[in-house]
Amino acid sequence: MKVIAAALLMGSACAFQAPLMTVSLKAKKVAPKSATLVVKKAAPVVAKKAAPVVAKKVVPVVAKVAPVVAKKAPVKIAVKKAPVIRRTTSETPSVTSRDVFSGGMDSVALPLFKAPITLDGSLVGDVGFDPFGFSTIKTGTQIGAFGDAFADNIKWYREAELMHGRIAMMAALGFVFPGFAHLPGNEWTGVDAYAYTNPLEALDKAPGAAVQQIFCFMAVLEFFRIKRIQDMGASYEAGDFGWGQGEGRWNPYNFNYTPEEYKEKQLQELKNGRAAMMGVLGLYLQAKASGVGVVEQLQAALESPGYYAKAGYFFPEGI
Image 1 (tube, helix red, strand yellow):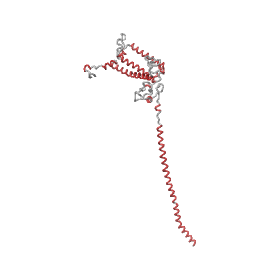
Image 2 (cartoon, helix red, strand yellow):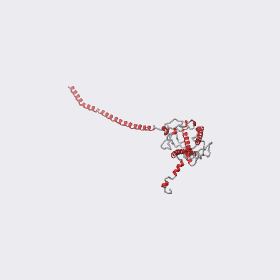
Image 3 (cartoon, rainbow, N blue to C red):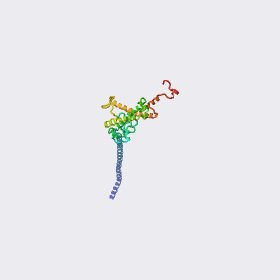
Image 4 (spheres, helix red, strand yellow):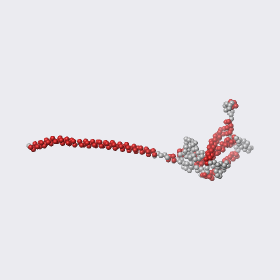
């Protein structure tokens, strides 16, 4: 019985101590809550701070550097230097018409256009007037009789311009002079053979022998010019007959210009020759239309009109 009573007492004592053990176990479960709190705080802080910093700072720096490379890449220097072909076009390969004008200077004669690359302003009287690009066509070296005198293609065109200008100046004088004086005729040629003031009519009325003399004189001058070109070769200057100032040249008037004055005289010859070529064309057309000479046309313009005798002079006296 004592043993049973002792067992009951031990059991009751254990029963009363059990709740205390339960409480201690519940208290130990609090530790996991604090652990979860640490995980929640640490993870978001690292994600929010690290990711945005890298994205905002690195990406814009790369975007700013890229346009700088793009601006330096399209350097268009080679476009201007490509069509550099100087005046010796007779020895250079053919170029397109676009290159001929795109690489030239601005034309002085035609301000809205470009001059061909062959007209670089180095020649006296070069104002860039060649709208059709004739100066770029190879012509001088194709005539074998002149050798290499016209290897520079521009020299060939300057020679032609000077020759035509000089002939036009003589022709303009021939249109005007017969109105003031003319050669006397005779029984063989005809008394009035040279009295016709209209040059177009005078050429038909002149004796055949006289016209042949004119052509023979022109042929002698032309053969002399060709012979001089062949002898001088590449050193020949356009339009140079060996007359004027200089050693070994025919200079009856003792010309002695400075280099600047000499260029000015060359320019005067060019301008007068160009004006004469245009003037002779007008004189020819006017003579063809009117049938009379230049002086007779001017006299008719200065005379009082035919109706003046009937209607009277319509300007007041003294005007």
